[in-house]
Image (cartoon, rainbow, N blue to C red; front, side, top):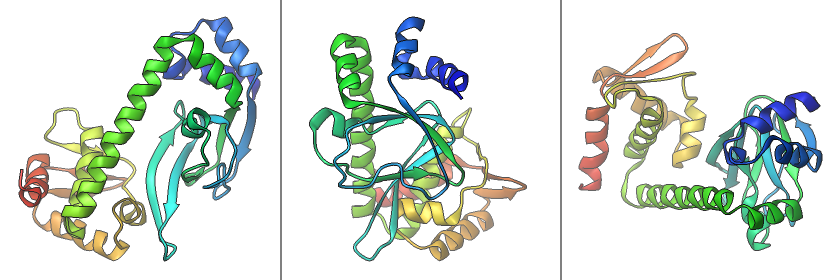
Length: 233
């Protein structure tokens, strides 16, 4: 496990500017733990302050509505990190974090180690600020979608976001594996039935196509038009 952790720390983008010896030192100061599917890594409102780096698997950041519906906020793959907000401002955790689908392995960095690192490394601090800025922009976009778009169009917008992350040419994208209806529903605050209906409508319109193990967005321009027409842009 230690060698696996070392290799992954070497590949974490946030640590790209550090020397090998500095990364070695960070590894020694972290606690490595394996979490099973469904097991909480972080609980919302808890007072822990560690910053977590994902060594293996994918973790999901979620919250729950008053009715108990799960709202997915983000998926963080191996090489990513989470928990920096509580380390930076001393406030309680703002969401739950757990492995997504399968197990995950994380390296928990004590708050004091993290704060000392960012105070000594301006370049690394800037990367963290850029990530926080992206989170704010994404949150603003989601708030606008929830405020201005109907459920069908929120599904369109989520598919378009995923397509932009997977496209090579801006016109067509292949989402692998096929996004689960429940995952899309959780992200845009709707039901699995609504997602299934929207995907069927898009397939009939020739905008998406289901293939074995993949959902192909055949026409991103038309999908974008469905969203922008409603947004009024």
